[in-house]
Length: 383
Image (cartoon, rainbow, N blue to C red; front, side, top):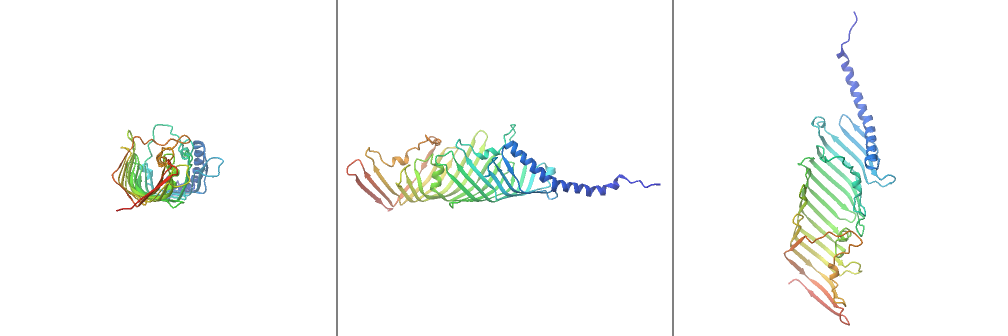
């Protein structure tokens, strides 16, 4: 009588076989599939080229490592987006909760080449695939910690008259306990420019709906940087000086009301400012120190309120031209927008300034309507 093996006899042998096949699929097949699908998507959906270094998947720990990723225009060496290393740790609960639950994501050495084209479009918008349907909701996801370190952004605005550029590096960013639902999560950002301008920003961020509140601090913001980016809207030229400011804000984009912003800046400080009219070689006004106290901005009300402004050490060179016009009128004249984008209209905005104090001023005035020109000087100091 022969021995008849039962079906359950083969189960112990099938378990290591199944684990072996699963491991082979995770360690060997998954990286190849990720590379193939990602390359095809970037090529077909975005019309860009994708370069990928080493890809590692751990099917037992549910982790993903990607090295040396770069997306750019076909035939160009400079990438639009790149990173040195991406690490993602997916929690096993994602399998039965039907949600992307990530315990941590680390992004090391990210790079963005952000450019506004002459027509006002942003090149990075090309990396967002066009939606084929009306559903724009985000997938359900929970992220315990996102860390971005050693980032760099090269920004250029070719839609403006001066075509300004700015580089921010390093960029460090953290996002904790974040959900794609209304709960959102907390974030912190720190970065600096090559000129020493620094930004520190922290608060709460939600994507559905899109809203944020928090605090920010800007130190060492150069006046010529401000002028380069806002010259199309400024009547005068800023040639020297720096700004320090900080405060709290609330921002939201709500259906029906659009974008709303409320901000409170306890103090805005300017040091060593120099002003001149456009297309002249000398500064007409210098301000060693200026302080704005209690600035409030409301986009909803289109209103700016300032408790007080204090100016110390003002020095100005003024004169009356032969036609009777004052040179200072050129400092306040609206910018010429014929060769560039139109400046935003400020007709509907209101400004309230409660108090102004000018200390230790020195004004030189010349009347060029008479011949020879008659100089006059007026100086004063704080009582």
